[in-house]
Image: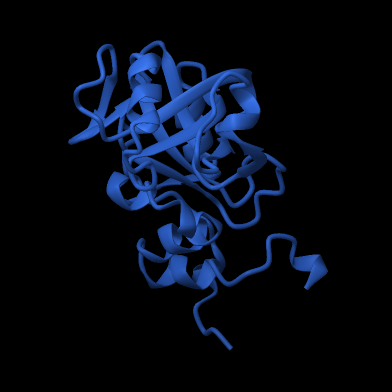
Length: 197
């Protein structure tokens, strides 16, 4: 039995969101899209915030979306968010891709898609280098700050490099939460809907 009842109090960790940081949803958020999610922030300005949900795989592969692209391997696609779900986004480590937006040291968003396809067709490694998403998550100016104040999100310490590992996507939320300390590690063990426990 826990003697300190504050251990169950969900409160912000007061880290300021910024491009390249991650959002971790609070443990009891019962939302199909954002419950138990980890979101990489790819833009955070006075115009608003854009991010990609990293741990919600879709039952689709790149070949399913690009009918004219015969990729020799099954490259998974993730649901980046509820907005523009017919648009493909890609996070990658390829610094030579023209027009790519730098997200963090050695990490980029989008850019020349023909160059990305050529990279894949040449048999270069995709795992750990490129991740694909349909849609994105977005907040109007001030909206994310309010949600953080309402304790819906924590700003995590996860490195972008670790986020490129798709094999760990199902455990990503728990791993990211545990990195924030003992209190958050305890939260990671709670069921999302306590009444179902």
